[in-house]
Amino acid sequence: MATEAISVRTPARGAGHDLRAIKVVLHREMLRFVNDRTRMLSMLLQPVLWLFVMGTGLGSLVQGSIPGVDFRTFMYPGMISMTVIMTGMFSAGSIVWDREFGFLREMLVAPVSRGAIVVGKCLGGALVATGQGVIILAMAGLVGIPYSPALMLTLLAEMFLAAFTITAFGVLLAARMKNMQTFFGLMQMAIMPMVFLSGAMFPLANLPSWLHFLTVINPMTYAVDPMRQAVFSHLDVPAQVNAALNPGVQWFGYQVPVPLELGLVAALGGVLLMFAVAQFRRAE
Amino acid sequence: MADQTAVAVRKLSKTYGKVEAVKGVDFEVPPGEVFGFLGPNGAGKTTTISMLCTLVNPTGGSATVAGYDVVRQRDDVRRNIGLVFQDPTLDGYLSAEQNLRFHAELYGVPKSVVGDRIRQVMEMVALWDRKDAKVMTFSGGMKRRLEIARGLLHSPRVLFLDEPTVGLDPQTRSAIWGYINQLRRMEDITIFMTTHYMDEAEYCDRIAIIDHGEIVVIDSPEALKASVGKDRVQIHTGDDARAIEALRERFDLDAAVHEGAVTFAVASGEEFVPRLFAELGMPITSVSVSRPSLDDVFMSYTGSTIRDAESGADTMAWMRTMARR
Image (tube, rainbow over all chains, first blue to last red; front, side):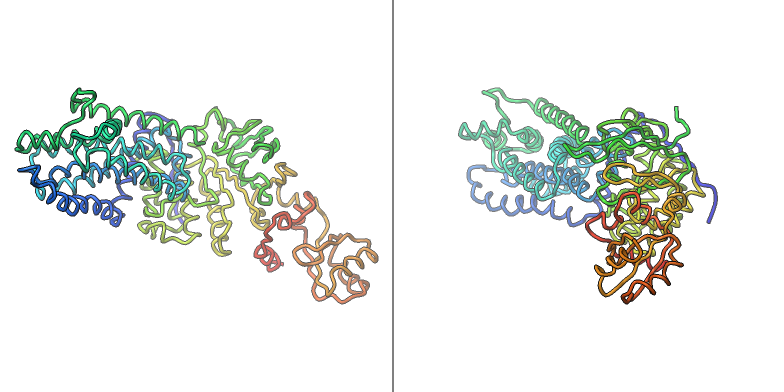
């Protein structure tokens, strides 16, 4: 057997080191995702079912009231968000998995900041979710949405933002969770109402006031609406159909502009991230 | 900043609620030593090691590892230690090499040496040819070897091994000891380990016997054995209770049943056996005489054998102990 041992000097902690830690946690997230084909498929199946089965079925019902627009076109941005949300949450849930199988310990005993690990995890989840969203994006043509580069880029960026925020939310949930069942139960409980109340499935115009209130306080609404506005701005739709399907979000009559909506999602993501880091700092 | 001592512990204690898991222990480990923490399950071994590894904050006292304080200089401690836990902490979905790369990045191993160093530690534990296999396909022994390799990757000054061979078959256990011994020759490293296997404690330079959260004694295995003096005799008879009584009446010896045999300590055991057969007055089906082992040391310092001290008797270890005699 050979030789002198190769001696390694590890550096004191610094920004460069934390950056490497973020990168490797992110990289692992990607590897895990690429290696898990089943997960990729199952995460895609649900939105595709909603879009093409539910969308087609409901579409035939409402066809008369929305002349010139395929109902699936309306649902499309919602389904992008749904994919992104499920994938992001699932990525976050792997923290619970890591805890159960011990790997979390390997990360937590390393001489890096907890922040780096949490940020890496959130970015990784966001990227993976965006990747998954790209597959839905590729189906745009099937529901009559043009492959305009500007639209695609806008959707991609909005997807990433939504994914980051939802992953941060998931990581916060997962921070103290000891087993997968609990996490997935909670995840279902959180996702279902968020999706239903976000305008992903039905337009938010002319809702009873209690329902309108719920949609306005649902953070996901502000992730779905910018995507829908982007899609509709690239469509040629009669004004009254646009008003019915793409009403935007209103606060007491104030039309919330897209930048503000995106800003809200980003701010929420930042706050959730901070809380998640704090949780991991505490969980010694 | 770093001083000569690899591990220095002063009145270190840990209380969970009302339970005193570790009751103010003191010890020092010089660099290059293989230091063993020996004791039954629940004696406070893992709690102590967790405090030294910065995973658990002590309730009292202080400790330095590689010259750094485990509470105030946590990251410095972490950079200078390698950890192998009882439970695996590998990602089964990644390949062996990917697991090590992850570790290298997390510990900031300079990029120029990562590849070579990974190869070196993996060759050392004879896993280089399996580097691309997913870890979930590995056996328990292979996983443990990979964890040892990973623990060494960043050239730690102190390697902590918490029960490194527990749950492994005898061949794998001896292989792991082979790596540990090789490690001492190749790398400038201090090894701090816990075990409840007596036969493994013999590989250590020094042992601390820990029981009920306190260190009972610290010395080299040889010195500890010499301090006991007497040989251990174990006999099997048809009626253990009568045999114990007979031993007391005729030889004035205190015997007790340990591990299924009537056991007692006596000076120069080999010379005693012929007398025993002649004078015990009852048939003996088998007899074994052993030089003081660490078992006896443990027994003489704590009043019970390590296996009796644990609820689940480890018959395997006992059978191996017998086989070596």
